[in-house]
Image 1 (tube, rainbow, N blue to C red):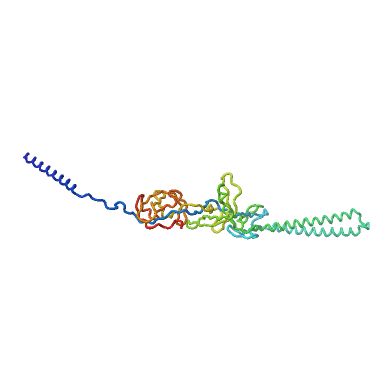
Image 2 (cartoon, helix red, strand yellow):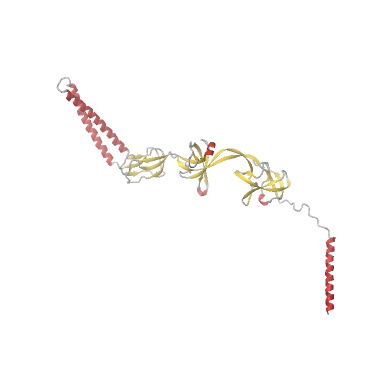
Length: 380
């Protein structure tokens, strides 16, 4: 039995050796496989080429600042101790110069006026009597009927009566002014910005009743550093970015009126005063303004040629101009300003570089592409 088992193992071992030898013989006889032509060089994408160009970029100075009233007028009462009888204006009302805003209770002032009128009439009568006495004294001056002292008294009485009448007439005019002051008038055209006048209040002379934006004019005061003052001048256009409905921005154009002649010692900034229309802008808004200060040469490429990966900007550069299959090289670039369909490249490629115009999101560094045709320059 053991002899039969040993013979079986020998048979199986021989069979295995035969199969191994046959496999080696077949492998040596098989022809070697040749690589497919152009294997690994298949184009990943068909693209258009575009050339980077140097163009003139507009230079913009960005400033921040607040909107203020051009000038504010404080409306107050010129007379004190009187009660407010009527308030005829409110916040937001547009008023004209001389328009009545508040009327004061004038009973006491009218009474003083009547009293003074009576005083004037009394002084007129006294003057008439003094003039009559003085006239008779002049007629009999040379007759000796009256002494020189008496005649002199009549003359002095006439002059005193004239002075008393003039004084009472001046006081009468003063009372008439006080009557006019019971009406508080707008000092200029404009819009009411604030109101502190309330019905029934007893006013004090000089106390503020209204605050008026003169002529409804407003201005934007932007802060500019000392180094930037030299590029600004009166008459430049400023684009203000105002908040609009539905989180949209409203652009309002203004004109530089003047630049502050001094620089603040704390902030080291100066103020630029810009006249703006009062359409959407309101005093108190803090907005951003942009001023066009000229042009600067810079490299521009189409927006479609720049892709963003991992927070960085990249372009794919073609090794040569012309059509046919080419290899692309991925370049990291630094971008700048944008205008229409162009974007500025400040670092990463040289001028006249040939780039993949679009489709870069589907490419990787070293891919081969079919270039269809060069595209016209980016600046055009």
